[in-house]
Amino acid sequence: MPKVDVVVIELSTPILIGVYKEGSLIKTLISDEYSSEALPKLFKEIRSSYEIENIVYTRGPGSFMAIKVAYIFLRTLCIVDDIKLFATNAFTFNQNQPIKAFAKLYFMNDNGTITTKKFDEPVNAPFTLPKTIKLSDYSQETTPLYVLPAV
Image (cartoon, rainbow, N blue to C red; front, side, top):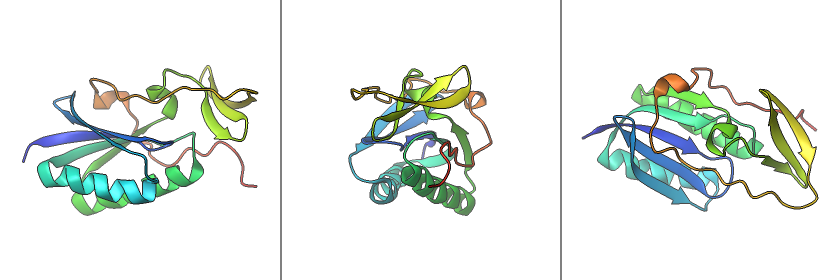
């Protein structure tokens, strides 16, 4: 089976997963299901055709539940199958645009500091998979990035 790297953008719907061979995107998988339903199905499909060497995921900010589910699922998969896990903040994949927090509140990247801002109208800033990746661009710090304090 071909060896590949995988990028997971799980913070909102749709969930996007990119399969990369030698740094170039060769396959895109999309799901409108919740992370808890989508990730096992999508990774079963990927693992049936490819050997995963590395996974990059968006560690936040975004949906707390999506971050938690993705981290637990991906971290477990990486431990069991000896896969390297990398992470990045979500702004990497939406051209540094606002990311929905809750209600009318959005996360903003203010020169590397994550803040929140209220918008009266919904902000449409979709996530996109890059055409190419370099693992050196991503961090080995993979713990979830929770920006808002617990309520």
